Length: 111
Length: 117
Image 1 (cartoon, rainbow over the protein chains, first blue to last red):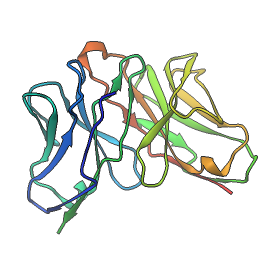
Image 2 (image 1 turned 120 degrees about the vertical axis):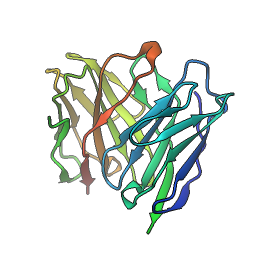
Image 3 (image 1 turned 60 degrees about the vertical axis):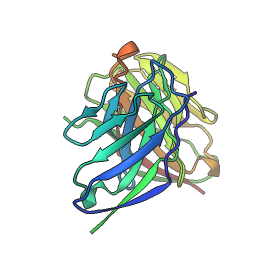
């Protein structure tokens, strides 16, 4: 299984960009990088995913290194509502479409 | 469009009691899942279903049973509750598209907080 390593916690000032790193050095060629977040006590929410190229949507940007061994989720202008646990997931069981969650990074956006 | 809903939101059980958690989705998704989340930890897969009438075990299936009699509903049963099953339970659903496309976006419900005394 492709493992991910994320820092347990990070702080970010409101209005600034939040850059959340993820290491996934054992990722295989057909595995995607997914990011979800979980705001306190709520169900996880999909943010973005990618394979090789950088991706951007209305919520965030995903930067994947050329060797695919690491990635960074960027929240361009963090708000207090972005305070959450962010999960980087690369192991996806193609047979059952399940997700394997690690411990994630707890992002605290400071006013 | 309600998305994924879960019933009940909270429940307290005594050891040995039984209960059923209901998950419903209105997105016509083929795949549905039950996860549990213990304090300070990530989600772990209990059971899942790839279509009406089919179910399969996940990582932590012991002590739970599931049924998917209708496409939109996925039920999680605890036959004899134990304190170790105190947790927050999340249901999720997704389309069956995927394979090489990797589009495994899952939609999660708000959770059921279960305490077993």
